[in-house]
Image 1 (cartoon, rainbow, N blue to C red):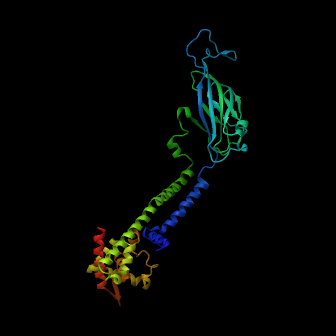
Image 2: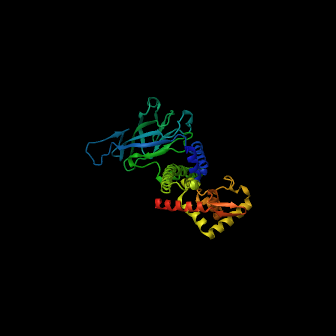
Length: 374
């Protein structure tokens, strides 16, 4: 049996005719996510990597004076701090020079005090080391030069700040860059992330949230297919091999006297399951069930015509179809149809009769298989 036909039979058994549609939807969903949902814009983050007081004298020391611009810093209850910021593009596209808004330059501001001095001290590329600059726009504001910032690139600035000793120094990003919806500040010294976990989970517009639902659902289906499809294929292969072994053992046990009679039964058993054969035996050995099945099958045949036995017309009648599909059909008619296909029941005119030798052969095989599978 070829690989293609084997997979086709497994597809019918597990109702995987829907699998092609699911896979098409999944990969379509991935394309939709890649094209419309996934954020491909630049993402600028300010990382606070240093915020240290370099002047913090609490006790009065006679004769000690620290003066800046003719002002005694200690007597004014001020302190000197060094602030280090790392600006990183963590997005999927570059920040180009045309993205900057001259009316709102990219930079930062501090909450109190004044910036005495500032400079770029490190960068990820030689271009940024040469071109990234920090300008002190006013005592509380620093502005960056307009530089191209590719994904993953960064530069670091260091500032000397004179600020009141009783006020904690804080930083706020400022400016406007096209395609950047928000400038994110991360205080690495405080161990904080840019957003709490649940804030990141529900972040995005209403449209993004609505589109996430089918994408995550399809992703879940894809994961389930990837997990269970190999299991189902292996399980089906092992089951078929076990059933073929049972057939060989029965042939040896019965000295092949039923080989010709049971040939259709062997083929059906190899593809299907023993429990189905047990149900078929119940129909053919129980007179009440046999009469009910014959009537249901006859009624169905008279309504649908002679093409009832066509594989294409009588969809789902094969007993290897999934239970939820079989339930849509008249169960006695389905079972009786299978008995007719196996030749265990033969049509004579307007009625049906049992082929007793085949009934006997089927019964012996089922008893043998039940012992082997128990």
